[in-house]
Length: 293
Image (cartoon, rainbow, N blue to C red; front, side, top):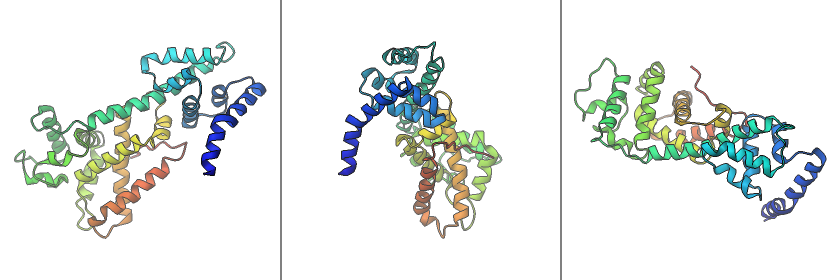
């Protein structure tokens, strides 16, 4: 109750008069003061909040512009806030970078969601080729005897036909598995080997798909904002999402063996424990989770 009252009075009265007072004292608007005070993800995050909660329609719409309208949007903001480009030459550059990050994050989620919704199709030649590529990357010295085969269990699929394991994350799960195996081949081989441990083993591909869901849910909940705002100085792309997935795969394997679960039956418990650990790291405004090998 008290929290709700504070939010109401802050949003409708206190914030307005505080901004007015600071403008009279500094001669600068809130956006300019943010640029003067903060850097990195903290700067972008504060700019995003300032625009979102502004009563000015031009500023509110700024967080939803498409990429090719960003320059014009920056000009509109400067006009609305009476910012002289000659007196504040850096404002235009800083605002453009922030808007590219803010709108880029929104577009990245839409791109990831689009791929996730695309089911694996065994009649799609590209999908089938991608699946075979995964096998060849992980098992370069062993030939797959048949498309539907018990051999798939050797890289951590549940059944004879991997397509059934991609239901939850669609083709996105396969794309992530291939990306890690192609860009971090030696690490993928090492983790696959460790996943066959007689006591601490787990299903490599299934866990990989599960970590795709984790990466996706963190992106959807906007928990990746600090990470991406620090890691990417411009527009975040699918490449950056894949890179974060690779970080999760590598770190989860280390986490699993450090924890030494009694059985794979406790996977969900340890998966959630790992999830909470990552969410905790992502709360740091200076965070940038990159795979270091």
